[in-house]
Image 1 (cartoon, one colour):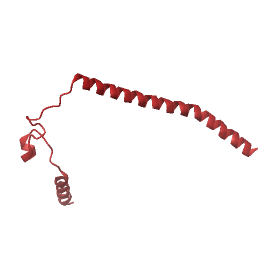
Image 2 (spheres, one colour):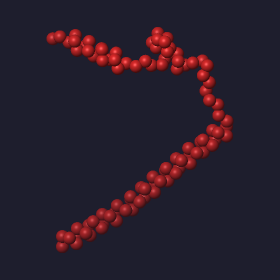
Image 3 (cartoon, rainbow, N blue to C red):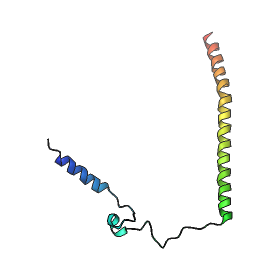
Image 4 (tube, helix red, strand yellow):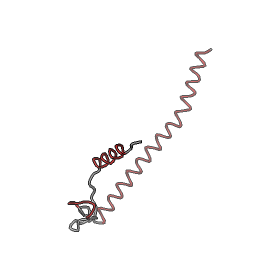
Length: 96
């Protein structure tokens, strides 16, 4: 049973599919080591008003989506028995 060829092929495929990842470990990333964790990059700063406005917009959007879902559910719950009754009456009419 010779599996050396299959194992070698799998290793080659893994090497070909491997991609360089950004990491802080210089031994793993080669030339781009530490590019994910640059010391020169600063996190963006936002004012309290911007944060409050964003939270308000997200909350309003969530409430609107929830209201829409509730309306759809209500329509489905009301329409299903009516539709079933109409189909029952139609079949009753067609059969008799």
